[in-house]
Amino acid sequence: MAEKFQNFINGEWCDASNGATFENRNPANWSDLIGTFPKSTVEDVDRAITAAQNAFNSWRLMPAPARGEILRRVGEIMVQKKEFLAREMTREMGKVLKETRGDVQEGIDTAFYAAGETRRLFGHNTPSELPNKYNLSMRQPLGVCGIITPWNFPMAIPTWKIFPALACGNTVVFKPASDTPRTATELVKILQEAGIPKGVVNLVHGGGSVVGNAMVDDPRVAAISFTGSSLVGKTINERAAKYLKRVSLELGGKNALIVMNDADLDLALEAVIWGAFGTTGQRCTATSRVILQSGIHDKFLKMLVDAANSLKLGNGLDESVDVGPCVSEAQRNSVHEYTLIGLNEDKAKLECGGEPAKGGELDLGWFYKPTIFSGVKPGMRIEQEEIFGPVLSVIQAETLEEAIHILNDTVYGLSSSIFTKDVNSAMVAIRDIQAGIVYINSATIGAEAHMPFGGVKETGNGHREGGWTVYDFFSEWKTIYIDFSGQLQKAQIDNY
Image (cartoon, rainbow, N blue to C red):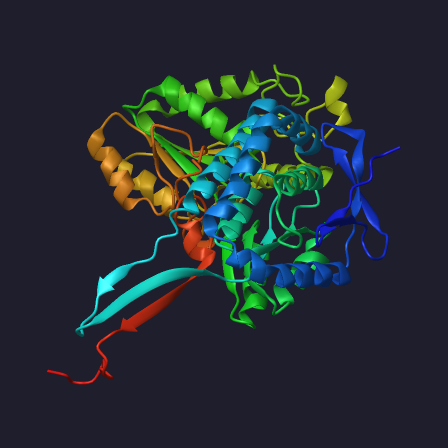
């Protein structure tokens, strides 16, 4: 019998108010039922927000370093449970163990970083323009924060949002992706074990159209932090605008990696293969385009196709496997639809892949062959639209300037990379690439927890996750003037 999981509201584990559930299955072996989870209602969301609102006052008044101690304990428990968490994550969403271990490690790093930041929630002091007067500023928490996360990084991304929110003194209502509810549940169990007070963190499972919208539409929720598609992000922004609600959006990407004639081709090859087919291409930072300077185009393309064809597909719990499944049948179908679009686009040539992977254990899950198109031209749909699967478009460019123009010519701007031994070319790329992240001689994937993460254009709305910048989103500035002159000094009056 399948294990039954629950919501976590006001410090108690509970079913959905209507008793409804949904199934969570292993995408590498669809017959493997991981468990059932609550298909929650608006009433469940309301209870969770009420609990978070009631817990806010005591939580915000707890000294920030004391909140940090709880987050430090969270990190320590995650260290102890790292292998368990990684294996359950692989079973739940498919990516290989070396990646799920990294996903958990990023959560661990974020916990320890957040614990330290509770002693560094700095304000600013500055001289007053008037005598016998001090000017100060300090951070204040927002209140209840709604956290909506995707399935591709089911531990790292929730920790990017939840830990800074808690460090700043906010309370949380957390809606994880329905494809990865198990990992979210384990994270909340760890928070509970670490001593998070009742009502400070609440977990509500269910679909975005019910649970997510109820969070966005509730005026008691002060902020929404969302990672997902640009289409859904725009809808959230529109709904939240009714309340002038603070919203952080980390959305899509169509990331490109440039390989110049002078590049270390073996290093570039490793980066492209890792960036394009790691997590089965299911990353917002995935390398979905590679732009090759003409002098190395033919040689590198052959290297690329040979490497892609040598990748081993299978269950990510097998340490020898390179590429796991798509997260669901619907996701695999979406990837294949884009392959068909590519086949119908003028002059694009399918070099390898282009179909579901079959045979043996691959028939049990939602596997798709690593796919490469060459001859792709700027403006083609497979070159412009986010596919979120193991599909790579190869584009040729004559010059650095042309390559950068092609890279920039999409509605997205998250991650980017250039491989070159010329420092001048690298500096031009750093200056001219329109993206939130630029890598020099490295893959487009591999963010570090203590650095800002996010993009430009339709990749987001300007906020950043990770590092010190996310604390600006989860806190409000308060300005304080202390006048000890003993008289009413009138600032912004002509005193000269």
